[in-house]
Image (cartoon, rainbow, N blue to C red; front, top):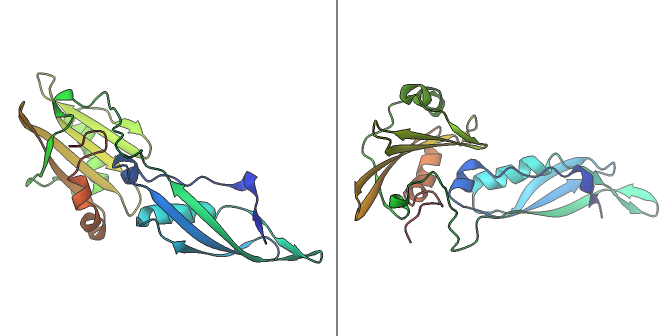
Length: 213
């Protein structure tokens, strides 16, 4: 059987949306190898359940190099089954984000009826920092923007994920409610309508570092 040339392995990128919402899974790929070690085909034997993770695994493994098998001293091709794991945060673990206000550690999330007033995700990414005169917090592939009022209170939290891809997304979180009932209003802007339909429920749970029990 052919084998993977370990030194050639390219790690798959954990898409930004999946990282911020702590999604993960296991993708199993079948890789068909020619007798010279080149990749003939890669297809998904078992999906992770998340299209963006599947595509990230495919993109990475297509860059790998393989050593062909051998039959009586002659190089031969074959099929190699490759598992790719995307490990989310452990169940029950809530990461700490020191910038997120303690009063909203476990808020109630509601849909925000006010849409994002930009024509596209790229337009929001370019214009929001200029409009509020605040720098982005860069942690590729996630960009975040914190907006404070004149009294220094955090009033909005923007999250940009997977920019310059078909899954690009801008999410605006608006802080409100009362000390006894903290509320965060959520709305998102998507590049593709299909992504909106698939992610709407998850975004209303909030980012993994500030979720209701």
